[in-house]
Every structure is written in C-alpha cells, then in structure tokens.
Image 1 (cartoon, rainbow, N blue to C red):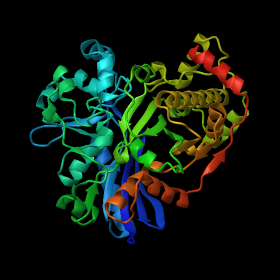
Image 2 (image 1 turned 180 degrees about the horizontal axis):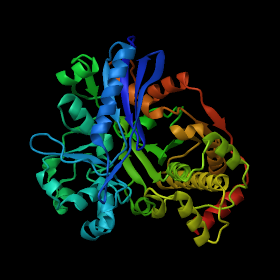
Image 3 (image 1 turned 90 degrees about the vertical axis):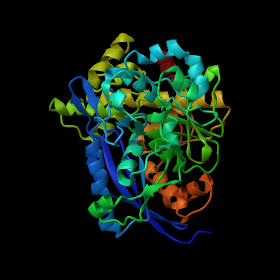
Length: 490
C-alpha cells in the first residue's frame, strides 16, 4: 500500500469562474483547500462571443502562486475545464485570437449542414456523441474557411492549451477529446475518415493522452513567476470537468446514476463500452470517455444555467436576490404548477431568462410564473423532471440498473433540487461532494504519483471516508410527476 502523502493543485475552470484548489492526499488522508478564485467572463467583440484565455491563464498562475505560498511546494498540477472549446496556434506556437465561446451564434445551422453531408446516423455510429450544436466538430466546420483557421497549425482544447503554456508540451487528453465529435468511440483514436469527409486536417489534432500521464514539467519562466520548482509535473487528469467529477462520485456499487450538477446537469451512468445503436442516437445520449477507460453514458441537461441567468437578469434590473431566501420561498410555492423543457434551444444563449421561461409557459398553456419564487420553483421542478427522465432512459438504453442517484457538484448544495430529484426519480439521492471535480482531479494526480493505489472503486472509497453526504428519500406523488412530464414531452 502507498504510504506517502502528496500535495497537488487542481486548476478547475468553469464557465463563470475558475479556482485553484490544493489537496493533501494519501492512503488515509484527503483534504482540499481553495487558495484562489477568479472570474471567467466571456467578452463580446463585434458579433462574436469569446473566452478571455489570457485572463484564465493569469488566474491559473495567480492560483499556483497562492498554492506555492500556502503549501510550501507542490508535487503535481492538474487542469480541468468545460468541454468543446479550443484555441488555435500558429506555426510558432502563438495563440491566434481568443477562443470562441460555445454559446456564440457561429454554429447556427452548421449541425444540420454536417448531418446532410456525412449523415447523422453515421456520425453517431462513429463518435457516439450527443447532438449539440456547439460540439467542436460543428465549431470547426463553422471556422474552416476563416483566415484564422488557415493560419492554424495546432488545435488545443482549453485545458490542453493552459497545460501547453505551463510546460511547452502539447497534446490532447482523451476524456475531453471524446467530446469533440472527432474521436472514434470504438477505437478511441481520431477518426481519419470523418476528418477527411469534413476537409479537416488531422495534423491539427494533438497526440492523445490518458489521465495519469505526465504532460511535462513547469517551464523556467513559469516556475520563477509562481515560486514553484521546475521539477513540478503537470499531470493529465480527466480534463473534461465531468470526467473528474465522476471519479469522485462516492458510489459503493456499480448500480448508480450521477447528476454532475452546475451550469449544466450531466446525467448518466458509467459503462465499460459505448452504446451506439439507433435508439441511443434518437434519445440523444452521448458516449464520452471517462477515467480508467470507462464510458460516461449521459445526456446534457441545461442545468442551473436557467437559475443563474434569471438571478443575473433580476439583479441587473435592480432586484436584490438572496439565493438562500429565494430557495426557501420557492419551496413554499405549489409544486409542478408549470414546467418547461430545460433543453429547449430558447434557453441556451445569455439573456432575459425569466421572460423566456414565461414565454414557454404561455406557449404551452400553463400558468405563467410571475414572482422570482414561482419562477425558481418552475426551474427546479423542470430540472428534477429532466433528471428523472434522463436516468430512466439511461437505464433502458444501456441495460444498467440504478439503485441510487448521486448528485455531485454545486447543485449538491441545493437541498430543494436534490429532494425534487429524489421525488421525480423515485430513487434515493445522495448529495455530495460539492467539490467533486477538484477531488477527482487531485485523486488521479495522487495515484499517478504513487500516493494512493487502486481502481475507481478504491478512489471512491477514499471519497466516502472523507465526505459527509446528505440523503434524500423519495416521496411525493409519482402520478403528478408523470402528468407533468406529459405536459413537456406529450
């Protein structure tokens, strides 16, 4: 058994903020401390919505500096972020403009054009990826004829881009690569036939890496700026944040579903092989690679983005929002009075979310929620309904039994959403850990460094031993949930 304890940093980037966490990990130890948090704000320049990649890098450097000061040194660094977005490098390794956000409108209509060219069925049989209009493959086709794309010699997904700036070594970590729509789900290699069909140069794509592989060591300039040693390795983790979060699902048996709940809800089960049949494609499930060769069989649900944008809209109009008070008020509102489909494309872009939700309720002949509390209850009921529907379909399509639903990530703090999810699923819900992504990131690093051993089951045992979980038993009226679903999906 491993006996050493290591100190590692997890740079965890979300669509609204980033943070750097420091963990002390060993066979009998798992402690996590946030040392730096920074805002991630997209920037609209002309018609295009960009990510400020240099600001993200600055935030990571500041976080590593704080980690060095707090911990006195690090044994490893791992980076995870949301999926699909990328930076382009020219022949000198310089970034060509700021990465474009997946919420930008440049991919409008592109998915349909790609499907007309290569066939939606063929695309799914090859990649196993859920049809989302912002998948990397559609972003690349949208950008293919631009001057910036003509200059590009390398494409790096965001965690790989940041790792490149830290180490000078490029590549493509496979859990995130599997979200691009360019990876063959069966061979787990870049799909040469698909790249050829779409006139995309395979040389753009980096060599695939597995979680646990060392990317490189810190460049001298980075070490000098942060106060760290050039001996510190940057280690590939599950660089898609959901891949890291699923590592930290504290499941005691394989018969579980998970809801990695934040801006998005990633709802699914863990499998050993992809499901690539027509029923899976029609249900719009995705087969993304997880740590240790697993498959994250899931569907994206719009998630707490609906509430986040609503709060932003109310605050911008001068209405002060106390989130805890809002959730207490929402709990007192009548349940299932109005429900929406969170995955309606109407709700994807930033904007006046309350007005869009009221518009959807009006269109479907339901009561229109006027107050913030009523609208919040509509959002949470609708998310719980979408969670339940997705868990049920995941079981049917994969044949994987589910006995418990684990809610991890920021949504684990939302007691009302967790209880509603238990009620809608008719299954017990265990909520926690909130910091699942950072914990999964650090556990993969610690295992690569030899401080812990074992497969996912052993890593999850360490999570259970060091995490307090909140339990929610199912209740309520199952028939009412079925009727509510019929209002949304017929």
